[in-house]
Length: 217
Length: 281
Image (tube, rainbow over all chains, first blue to last red; front, side):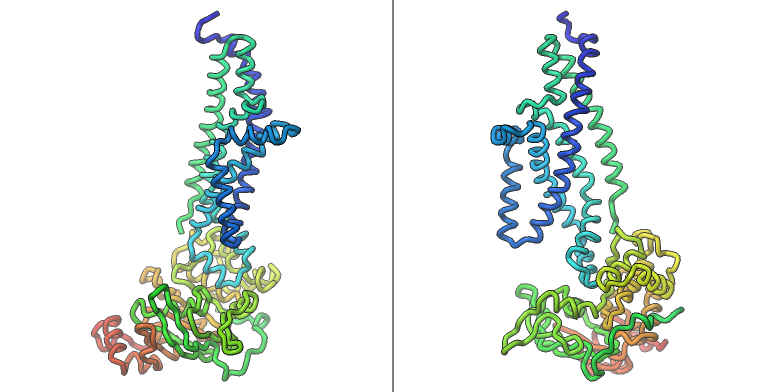
């Protein structure tokens, strides 16, 4: 009963972990990544097109969000919006938190578009919106896909922080099982293995994408 | 090869021939403390082919970039067809024009760059029709038909669906020329268009530009190190040094009998000492 590893407990906890993984961890990761990807792009473009003082304010807010721990932000939002479902809080906080990182990635991606591309759009009298939509963003995105993917993985691995606001994601599910059966080792180990099995192939995919997408101007 | 000008897309009647296509008036350009151009005055008549020569750093490329509004004018005025390009004089003051007014004039000007600057995220065809469709408001069919004509005339009709980075430098530059011509510019700026190409490819690009020069009345302002090309295509050569025009002449005079000592030494350095380095075509 007290041996380090119990296969029966492992088999018993696995379905619960997988269920929490699919219902919470994956959903939060996918939805928050989508929010962060879109919001990050909006922030990056805004910062490059609004007057300088406004851009400074946007930068400051972004720095502020990046320089404070995500757990503090989760708790702050949770206690501020008590009537909101914690999973919604989680998705919003993860989305906004990571959008500030993504904005930096997009900024670098936009800056990696050679000056000659901008000059060509001007020589062709292209409008500002068309310049962004048809030329700059498609090229910037190619440069940013790998970094965006890595932030998505990083966010995925941060989802256990959700347990701080009572969301039953995979690790919380494991801890609950552990508390009920006095078997923590299997639950925690398997949760780690599931994270690894999901992250590792994704990161391989990203580095393959990176090679395929690179432009050689 | 079909001719470059399509009768359907010829722009509205142009101003009287006496109005210069390009006019520089007391133009000054500084980069920080570095004065690149100072008190520069010159005119380019409609249909002229003017080549700018001179040592690097003499401001030749800056002149093209000012006309394309890629650089901001530090002082003075540039007029296109007699209309101010970026700044005008109002009540004795130098006032910058609004973006809308600037764009209206900019549309008449096309530019081909040393580094081609094709959009790598678009196919060759998409590169060429992008501005005709979204800037000039042509239908996609109309723009495509014209683009195919232009690709034919630059010898790349089978590359419409290729992506720029799959093409050689010479091919990319030919596409860039087609892209600029698709906007039916009145003025075409050629900025060292062969400098990034392998020597054996230079000829094919210059051949196309010669053809355009022969078959259209587009005003051309050319910066090049290809003196033979300058001689073949241009009817005027301006020698720049230190941001000023030191000599201006027909290519025949400029290349056989330059008057200014600075021009003589420059041409000697560029062409070598041989007597007949520049033959005629």
